[in-house]
Amino acid sequence: MTAGWTPDLLLQRLAARGSHPAVIASSEAGVVTTSSAALAADVAALARRLRAAGIGAGGRVALCGPNGVDWITAALAVLACGGVLVPIDEQSDVGQFAAALRSSNARLLVASAARLAACTGPVAQRLQLDEWRTLPEGEDGPLPASSPDAPALLSWTSGTTGNPKAFLLTLHNIGSNVEAIEALHIAGVEDRALLPLPLHHAYPFVAGVLSTLSIGTAIVLPAAPTGPLIVRALRDGEATAIVGVPRLYEAILAVLEARFAKPGRLAALAWRGALAVATRLERRGLHAGRLLFRPVRSALAPRLRRPRNG
Image (cartoon, rainbow, N blue to C red; front, top):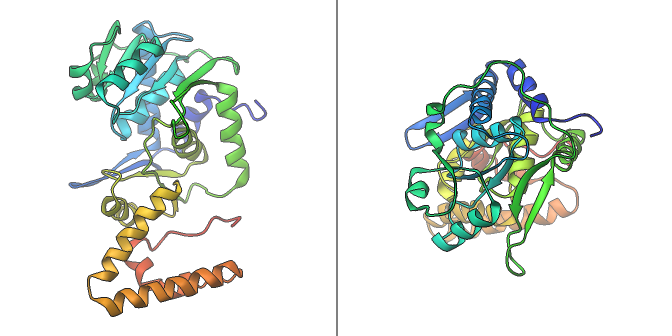
């Protein structure tokens, strides 16, 4: 790898940042922040436990659960111990889940309690996602270094044009993407990136988790991927950036349109008119939206900004 990105390097960077926030999780009860040093310590501890449980180089670990700091901890620990991460969609039905688990040849399934209860697949070891500390502690000391050509992530395509197809990424594949994102300098340690996408997909995991944590950008997780809760996380997490796809921005826009429709027809027409004007000016290189929608920005996402190179 050109700049030598590895899971171990990521853990070193996290540990060095100390109390700097790594994950900011929004929920109905409030916001819970996990520091960079705490995340690094938990990942290293779980990686050693996985090694002690027999997950070594190339050992496949299936991971199925909701977005959260436990999911991120488990995913990073699998990479750090030299294993192959196999993330499975938590929303998959029983048949899809069983098929993915069967084809993965995973030695360990780390999943939510509901998934473990419903699992009948041929997995030798099982671990509840939020109970990883029940595993016996591993030996202290540095974790083994992995080869850049070592397999690291087994995932599936989204299946939008056919049946999902499995693909395998090496550490080099992942690291080259992380390094390319770092080289863009679109975010830094002062930023907080909203990440509402399902983490089992390669894009949100590599771009939204590995790259942001490597750069030092904090991850903001909404309580659930719904428009209102995404907007709430934007505000409560003081997000400055969003890792998203078109459907996500459509959901945020739908929330805003619904809010402006409540006062009546005139408010809705004013919103649509201002949006049309801002869109036309934006296409001419004039960023008028910041001024036209200042009250909206102040109420929902006052720190959200354009990319530095945008």
